[in-house]
Length: 451
Image (cartoon, rainbow, N blue to C red; front, side, top):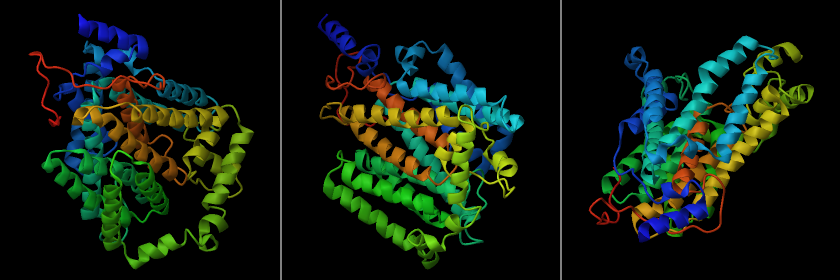
């Protein structure tokens, strides 16, 4: 009776999300989580394109369909449809609606419709399934490890197959070198999380081993936008990652710097040097450079303020409306959304990012106990914040508005907020998170690995 009273008291304080935070049922993997993991490996890590033998199996389609079906028939409390609701989810659905509305008046209706049906709608569904599938912080931790592993596998195969000929990581499947640079930066904080937050030595060693090819591939990509994003993540890690002692943060950055210096060649540093010498950069002097493209992009947004030129139609606008008559990419996710979806689309996107950050900040303030499981949410929240910082900065230089990497990070953040009762609205005080009791009434051993 006393335990039931506690549940009701928590429900009154948290709203509909409180019971989930106090009754985690994620001690083991289940079939739905396995399917979601395969979905992350294929939609973000593009594993099936790295290994063409998997292509006939259609793993993304199969994993996606199974994930949706298993989620619909799952009756556990932590996976009820109402638990997916949050401010971030509201903004995600609003952005999806605006993409739909932009199709009829698009400069390229066929391309906009294809982007909607073949890409963005599936990405938003993946976001919803990830948020709905997680039952507790261990599930979020598992999917974060899958995301990190996907980046490591992509980096390793990329170095082995595509990095030797030109000296730069070119001709990658799906991602170009710059996109991969941002992908690697978003995965890096999760790898560091597993190095410092796992008690099992095997997982720490696996994370350490994975960081090496990830950093080498990042350097081989030669992305200047990725380099700026990496600096932002490193600064966040040193100043803001308070769940890791300062001495370990400094040591971690020094070790990464050593690996980075060993991997970087003179040509890499010469390329990075142009960031400080913009007069030498074509992006500021050429009509096809980023500065002129961004200026024209803002012009498209002002000319079409409500619905933009249509989702996925920035290149068409460049070819038809600009004087250069070349189908160039926006090279900036914010310019991309503003031009393609108008002012409302840009506002929805910014609100989506800020609401995701608000969820993570709320999780970060949750009081924790002494065991590893109860301390997982704040630690993981700060690592996901670092990933978010990497994306937000990297997106200033790349066309990543619809990229599945960002939507996966957002889903992990909202899923973590869901299981701690903070996704619906930030609050100031939370009851301590405790490990659920086993059916026998005996608490599981503190620090027991969730794997």
